[in-house]
Length: 392
Image (cartoon, rainbow, N blue to C red; front, side, top):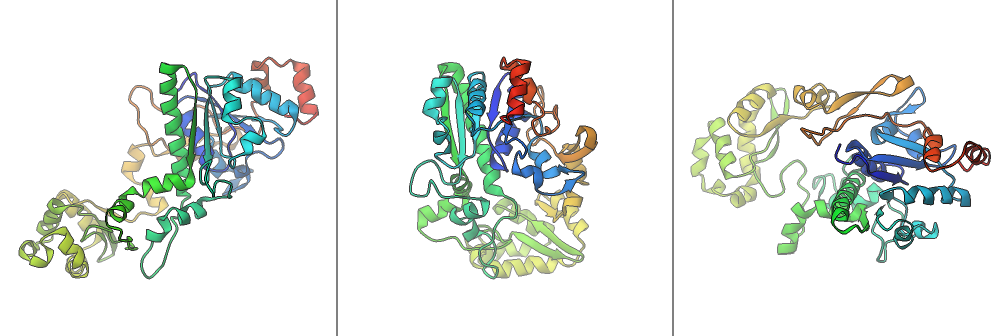
């Protein structure tokens, strides 16, 4: 697999960091998750718990190993340092400054291992007036501008339901690590990679912020309408709503042909997208009158055949029964040993020659502690002492 032979020391918990390290593990990296003895990642106790197993935890920690270490103890930190010496990457999502207090900031890490790549994921970044503030996804959504443009004029600001800033920051972290590993092949030098929840969301907001930076005009909340294209959005058919997305003039004309509204091509109100945006309510109403005459299934078939992107609003149940989703293996059964087969989302990156695979179940707390310590050269008696003194 692409990252086979790369060892990652995973000091992360909850979502952003575990998602980052799971992406690396899915590509073949050996990810060793460091957890607090007796407690572990708080995600182990969150979400739906079935027979003592958090499916939430499992979904973000497949393909990893788990060891327990008391990092407050000198012995625990000594073990961590020994592990870092034999690793390629260290990932944490502590607040800025915590790694330095532990004596493990990048300057110290590169003395331990000159080739080490350190990735830190934080709320606001490592410098600046907000760096030390606590942050979670909801705060990042609020402060990145995302909530200001999400929702409708009636609803007011709205959050995206999933923890999107955690996921994007984790994705950027994995991307930065992969780039740094490539650079290290040429230079032999390690790297410090930093990303944050707020920065990551601002980056994804470029679609909206480009217009603001060009014009100074604040984008408005448009709900299910497109912020810069019309007609576009949800339209009610005979038996429910369909999503229709004619994203440019060519597709708009295909929509008019499919709806037998060719006469609108000569209507001056709708001659350009800017004019259609100005007359959004009028063009939406005309399209809506046509859509309501037939059922959803008809429009999905008819409009897609005409080249107009159209889809249904699917529930989670419908998503994971969708023939395309099943064909793409975006839901898969993973053997979680004594818990049996459990379902989780599949791999979004498809690689022909070296495909991702679920080769390790999510680990039990501390499952690989003895194995890793043995690989680091600890004797049986030393391992037992570390266990008895609750270092591991």
